[in-house]
Image (cartoon, rainbow, N blue to C red; front, side, top):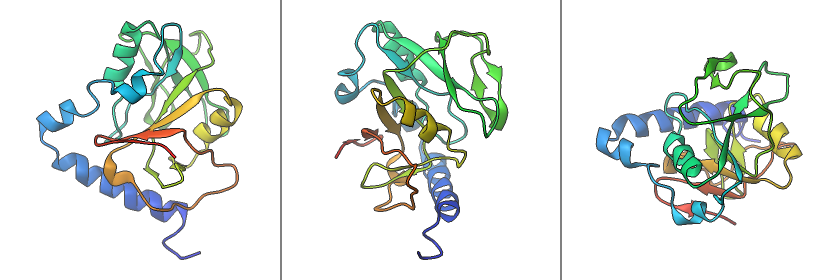
Length: 189
């Protein structure tokens, strides 16, 4: 394995790429990106489905508009709830506009007493993705562990196009995604 083909080096490289890309976007382009659900994603957002999203941090793709629109289509919405690096991530029900509480790692999440749910669709943040639809996350393994238990859920990564790598370092426990949505394209295998 080459020295630059390890997860930590790749995280650093792709965070910098993502930050530079988003910083260079005009306010109008940033507001338009990911503002309307594209048809490949819309096919999954049927009434009664549970869609898990997240609250974006920094230059991550912000799924807020998608979650609001999915709720308007009759989907229930969930957000991740994390208590520590080692504890499993849970998905708790949330309605757009409801209050959120501070969690570890700078996360905003539903309060612990929000109802637990099992998502049908998981919109996942990521640092980078590759041609195999492998996802490089923040490094705590929360999404890989959660997705390994959600074998019926459709996992869709949200990313800026500059977060693509032809190949990423991966481990046997890393979970591939079903699709990636960037500001330019819908990517599947």
